[in-house]
Length: 167
Length: 187
Image 1 (spheres, chains in turn yellow, red):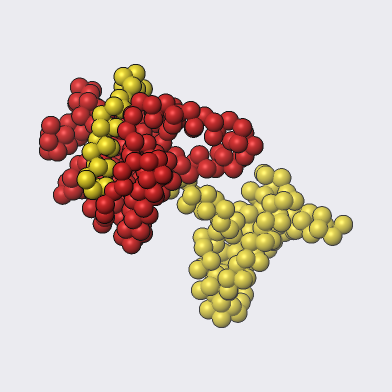
Image 2 (cartoon, rainbow over the protein chains, first blue to last red):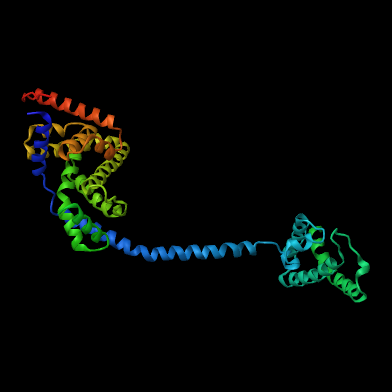
């Protein structure tokens, strides 16, 4: 008899004498049920994942906007000063000033300060042409008065900010 | 139960039909158990692996290719689980090198002895003494009747390697059998 045939025969006989212990069924059944529970639990898990992703998708842009320039409150966006000959760097410089002011002033003071700055900047933008050259003669009398008024109101704030910066 | 029916039951089982699970278990557990028992000797380990094979079965059912025989797919999972277990065991052994030498080998040896006395078959007891790499080829070739190419695919090794392992296994079996005073086999 060839060894191939003998091997086949003997292995079959040997296998026949091996019996799977009956209590293994209970164990496999348990892990089967565990699998089913896990599978059923997976659907709400998926929903939760999607909800999480949506929440993150909403939160990220809003935090990005929140972290953007303080100067946006005054100009709207950097495009505004770019139309008047300013650059992105100028914009950041102004923003830096505002950041410094925010650090030095109280909340109410800062509100007032940025409101005044906004008015002042609007007047300034009005008289500044595309090349960044100011034409003060273009202001009406009323506007000139307004300009001075604002400037005088702002003066104490500037003192406070610069004074604290250079004691 | 043919492949088609078995697949139908398995599909039902994976979607939660417990009686279908029972049928699948009845149809497959002896085959899985015997295959694993030829490859691993510790009784506890055999049971652990059989359990893992079932878990692997319903977890990867979605990846089953219906053009292939069910048994082939099942043996693929079984062999992979045994190999995973071997890898893990090897890692365990490295960590507890000293313990292994004290207890593990002895443990394995007693289990082997139990299995051998159970069998009473000369040649198959020699098969159990082959190294794992040779033994797995012999089991797939002579117990499950797979072609060399199929074994190569199941074990993820080149066909040439399967051939040489098969050859080496037969050579060792002949030699051991002769040494035990049995009849010499012709080629």
